[in-house]
Length: 231
Image (cartoon, rainbow, N blue to C red; front, side, top):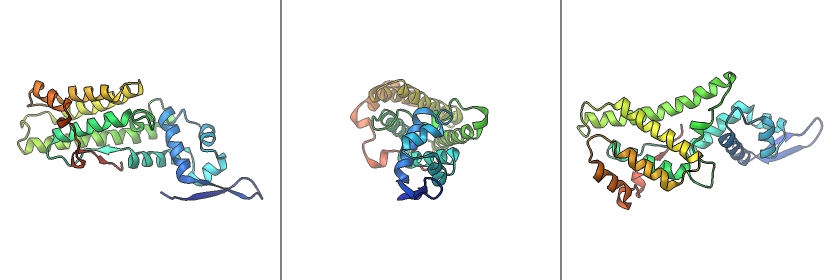
Protein backbone atom coordinates (compact mmCIF):
# COMPACT_ATOMS: atom_id res chain seq x y z
CA UNK A 1 0.00 0.00 0.00
CA UNK A 2 1.32 3.41 -0.87
CA UNK A 3 1.53 5.95 1.91
CA UNK A 4 1.96 9.66 2.37
CA UNK A 5 0.10 12.41 0.62
CA UNK A 6 -1.36 12.09 -2.86
CA UNK A 7 -1.77 14.98 -5.26
CA UNK A 8 -4.47 15.30 -7.89
CA UNK A 9 -5.40 18.11 -10.25
CA UNK A 10 -8.71 19.74 -9.45
CA UNK A 11 -9.27 20.76 -13.07
CA UNK A 12 -7.53 21.84 -16.30
CA UNK A 13 -4.78 24.31 -15.56
CA UNK A 14 -5.48 24.33 -11.83
CA UNK A 15 -2.97 23.61 -9.12
CA UNK A 16 -2.77 20.20 -7.51
CA UNK A 17 -4.56 19.52 -4.21
CA UNK A 18 -2.95 16.99 -1.90
CA UNK A 19 -4.64 14.69 0.59
CA UNK A 20 -3.62 11.87 2.91
CA UNK A 21 -4.19 8.69 0.93
CA UNK A 22 -4.01 6.39 3.94
CA UNK A 23 -6.52 8.47 5.86
CA UNK A 24 -8.83 8.58 2.83
CA UNK A 25 -8.61 4.79 2.53
CA UNK A 26 -9.51 4.34 6.20
CA UNK A 27 -12.57 6.55 5.69
CA UNK A 28 -13.56 4.54 2.62
CA UNK A 29 -13.27 1.30 4.61
CA UNK A 30 -15.64 2.69 7.21
CA UNK A 31 -18.16 3.70 4.54
CA UNK A 32 -18.08 0.26 2.90
CA UNK A 33 -18.23 -1.42 6.31
CA UNK A 34 -21.34 0.50 7.34
CA UNK A 35 -23.24 0.56 4.06
CA UNK A 36 -21.94 -2.35 1.97
CA UNK A 37 -20.39 -2.26 -1.47
CA UNK A 38 -23.39 -1.58 -3.69
CA UNK A 39 -25.08 0.96 -1.43
CA UNK A 40 -21.91 3.01 -1.08
CA UNK A 41 -21.78 5.44 -4.01
CA UNK A 42 -18.83 7.35 -5.37
CA UNK A 43 -20.61 10.54 -4.29
CA UNK A 44 -20.92 9.35 -0.69
CA UNK A 45 -17.33 8.13 -0.69
CA UNK A 46 -15.88 11.39 -1.95
CA UNK A 47 -18.01 13.41 0.48
CA UNK A 48 -16.82 11.30 3.42
CA UNK A 49 -13.21 11.33 2.21
CA UNK A 50 -13.25 15.07 1.61
CA UNK A 51 -12.10 14.82 -2.01
CA UNK A 52 -13.56 15.19 -5.50
CA UNK A 53 -14.33 12.23 -7.80
CA UNK A 54 -11.32 12.93 -10.08
CA UNK A 55 -9.04 12.67 -7.06
CA UNK A 56 -10.59 9.33 -6.09
CA UNK A 57 -10.09 7.95 -9.59
CA UNK A 58 -6.53 9.28 -9.79
CA UNK A 59 -5.54 7.81 -6.42
CA UNK A 60 -7.46 4.51 -6.39
CA UNK A 61 -8.59 3.74 -9.94
CA UNK A 62 -12.31 3.27 -9.40
CA UNK A 63 -14.81 2.23 -6.75
CA UNK A 64 -14.08 -1.49 -7.23
CA UNK A 65 -10.33 -1.03 -6.83
CA UNK A 66 -10.91 1.19 -3.81
CA UNK A 67 -13.05 -1.55 -2.26
CA UNK A 68 -10.30 -4.11 -2.84
CA UNK A 69 -7.80 -1.85 -1.06
CA UNK A 70 -10.27 -1.29 1.76
CA UNK A 71 -10.65 -5.06 2.23
CA UNK A 72 -6.86 -5.43 2.31
CA UNK A 73 -6.71 -2.74 4.97
CA UNK A 74 -9.42 -4.51 6.95
CA UNK A 75 -7.64 -7.86 6.92
CA UNK A 76 -4.35 -6.25 7.97
CA UNK A 77 -5.97 -4.26 10.78
CA UNK A 78 -8.90 -6.31 12.04
CA UNK A 79 -8.80 -9.73 10.37
CA UNK A 80 -8.03 -12.78 12.49
CA UNK A 81 -7.32 -16.43 11.85
CA UNK A 82 -6.75 -19.48 14.01
CA UNK A 83 -3.82 -18.95 16.33
CA UNK A 84 -0.94 -21.36 16.96
CA UNK A 85 -2.66 -23.16 19.84
CA UNK A 86 -1.67 -26.77 20.43
CA UNK A 87 -5.13 -28.13 19.60
CA UNK A 88 -8.06 -27.17 17.41
CA UNK A 89 -10.49 -26.65 20.29
CA UNK A 90 -8.24 -24.09 22.01
CA UNK A 91 -7.67 -22.31 18.70
CA UNK A 92 -11.39 -22.10 17.87
CA UNK A 93 -12.25 -20.97 21.41
CA UNK A 94 -9.61 -18.21 21.23
CA UNK A 95 -10.91 -17.13 17.82
CA UNK A 96 -14.51 -16.87 19.04
CA UNK A 97 -13.41 -14.88 22.10
CA UNK A 98 -11.41 -12.54 19.91
CA UNK A 99 -14.36 -12.01 17.57
CA UNK A 100 -16.74 -11.35 20.48
CA UNK A 101 -14.51 -8.43 21.42
CA UNK A 102 -13.74 -7.26 17.88
CA UNK A 103 -17.30 -7.39 16.54
CA UNK A 104 -18.51 -5.16 19.39
CA UNK A 105 -15.52 -2.81 19.55
CA UNK A 106 -17.00 0.72 19.70
CA UNK A 107 -14.03 2.23 17.84
CA UNK A 108 -15.24 0.82 14.52
CA UNK A 109 -18.53 -0.35 12.94
CA UNK A 110 -19.98 -3.57 14.38
CA UNK A 111 -19.50 -6.98 12.85
CA UNK A 112 -17.29 -8.01 9.95
CA UNK A 113 -17.18 -6.46 6.48
CA UNK A 114 -16.13 -9.81 5.01
CA UNK A 115 -19.55 -11.16 6.05
CA UNK A 116 -21.75 -8.11 5.46
CA UNK A 117 -19.97 -6.15 2.72
CA UNK A 118 -21.78 -7.78 -0.21
CA UNK A 119 -25.06 -8.89 1.36
CA UNK A 120 -27.36 -7.01 -1.01
CA UNK A 121 -25.30 -6.73 -4.18
CA UNK A 122 -26.86 -6.51 -7.63
CA UNK A 123 -25.94 -9.10 -10.31
CA UNK A 124 -23.34 -6.69 -11.68
CA UNK A 125 -21.40 -6.96 -8.43
CA UNK A 126 -21.25 -10.75 -8.35
CA UNK A 127 -17.44 -10.59 -8.41
CA UNK A 128 -17.53 -8.73 -5.09
CA UNK A 129 -19.81 -11.39 -3.59
CA UNK A 130 -17.54 -14.13 -4.92
CA UNK A 131 -14.44 -12.47 -3.47
CA UNK A 132 -15.87 -12.17 0.03
CA UNK A 133 -17.43 -15.64 -0.11
CA UNK A 134 -14.03 -17.09 -0.99
CA UNK A 135 -12.50 -15.35 2.03
CA UNK A 136 -15.19 -16.81 4.30
CA UNK A 137 -14.65 -20.25 2.81
CA UNK A 138 -10.93 -19.93 3.50
CA UNK A 139 -11.67 -19.33 7.18
CA UNK A 140 -13.98 -22.34 7.31
CA UNK A 141 -11.41 -24.50 5.52
CA UNK A 142 -8.76 -23.54 8.09
CA UNK A 143 -11.05 -24.70 10.91
CA UNK A 144 -11.78 -27.97 9.12
CA UNK A 145 -8.07 -28.56 8.54
CA UNK A 146 -7.25 -28.09 12.23
CA UNK A 147 -10.06 -30.48 13.22
CA UNK A 148 -8.80 -33.13 10.80
CA UNK A 149 -5.25 -32.68 12.11
CA UNK A 150 -6.48 -33.30 15.66
CA UNK A 151 -8.41 -36.37 14.55
CA UNK A 152 -5.27 -37.71 12.86
CA UNK A 153 -3.29 -37.03 16.04
CA UNK A 154 -5.82 -38.84 18.21
CA UNK A 155 -6.99 -35.69 19.98
CA UNK A 156 -10.48 -36.13 18.51
CA UNK A 157 -12.41 -39.28 17.63
CA UNK A 158 -11.36 -40.63 14.25
CA UNK A 159 -14.97 -40.57 13.07
CA UNK A 160 -15.49 -36.87 13.83
CA UNK A 161 -17.34 -35.02 11.05
CA UNK A 162 -14.70 -32.37 10.34
CA UNK A 163 -16.65 -30.74 7.53
CA UNK A 164 -19.84 -30.55 9.57
CA UNK A 165 -18.06 -29.27 12.68
CA UNK A 166 -16.17 -26.68 10.66
CA UNK A 167 -19.40 -25.51 9.01
CA UNK A 168 -21.02 -25.27 12.45
CA UNK A 169 -18.34 -22.94 13.81
CA UNK A 170 -18.37 -20.91 10.60
CA UNK A 171 -22.12 -20.50 11.13
CA UNK A 172 -21.50 -19.46 14.74
CA UNK A 173 -19.08 -16.78 13.53
CA UNK A 174 -21.61 -15.45 11.02
CA UNK A 175 -24.33 -15.51 13.67
CA UNK A 176 -22.12 -13.58 16.09
CA UNK A 177 -21.59 -11.02 13.34
CA UNK A 178 -25.34 -10.53 12.90
CA UNK A 179 -25.90 -10.35 16.63
CA UNK A 180 -23.26 -7.63 16.90
CA UNK A 181 -24.88 -5.69 14.05
CA UNK A 182 -28.19 -5.98 15.93
CA UNK A 183 -26.63 -4.44 19.03
CA UNK A 184 -25.48 -7.44 21.09
CA UNK A 185 -22.80 -6.72 23.68
CA UNK A 186 -19.41 -8.36 24.02
CA UNK A 187 -20.66 -10.25 27.07
CA UNK A 188 -23.57 -11.68 25.08
CA UNK A 189 -21.28 -12.82 22.29
CA UNK A 190 -18.93 -14.40 24.82
CA UNK A 191 -21.88 -16.42 26.13
CA UNK A 192 -22.59 -17.49 22.56
CA UNK A 193 -18.97 -18.56 22.23
CA UNK A 194 -19.19 -20.53 25.49
CA UNK A 195 -22.33 -22.33 24.31
CA UNK A 196 -20.74 -23.10 20.95
CA UNK A 197 -17.62 -24.57 22.54
CA UNK A 198 -19.79 -26.76 24.77
CA UNK A 199 -20.78 -28.55 21.56
CA UNK A 200 -17.17 -29.62 20.86
CA UNK A 201 -17.04 -33.42 20.59
CA UNK A 202 -15.56 -35.43 23.42
CA UNK A 203 -15.89 -32.86 26.22
CA UNK A 204 -18.11 -32.62 29.27
CA UNK A 205 -20.66 -29.89 28.61
CA UNK A 206 -20.79 -28.85 32.26
CA UNK A 207 -17.04 -28.65 32.81
CA UNK A 208 -16.48 -27.08 29.39
CA UNK A 209 -18.94 -24.26 29.97
CA UNK A 210 -17.48 -23.59 33.40
CA UNK A 211 -13.91 -23.45 32.15
CA UNK A 212 -14.76 -21.14 29.26
CA UNK A 213 -16.72 -18.72 31.41
CA UNK A 214 -13.92 -18.40 33.96
CA UNK A 215 -10.99 -16.02 33.49
CA UNK A 216 -8.67 -19.03 33.28
CA UNK A 217 -10.65 -20.34 30.34
CA UNK A 218 -10.13 -17.18 28.34
CA UNK A 219 -7.10 -16.79 26.08
CA UNK A 220 -5.07 -14.14 27.95
CA UNK A 221 -1.62 -14.90 26.64
CA UNK A 222 -0.36 -13.74 23.22
CA UNK A 223 0.27 -17.36 22.23
CA UNK A 224 -3.41 -18.12 22.71
CA UNK A 225 -4.74 -15.21 20.66
CA UNK A 226 -5.77 -15.48 17.01
CA UNK A 227 -3.20 -14.26 14.54
CA UNK A 228 -3.80 -11.24 12.36
CA UNK A 229 -4.76 -12.38 8.90
CA UNK A 230 -3.86 -10.85 5.58
CA UNK A 231 -6.68 -12.50 3.67
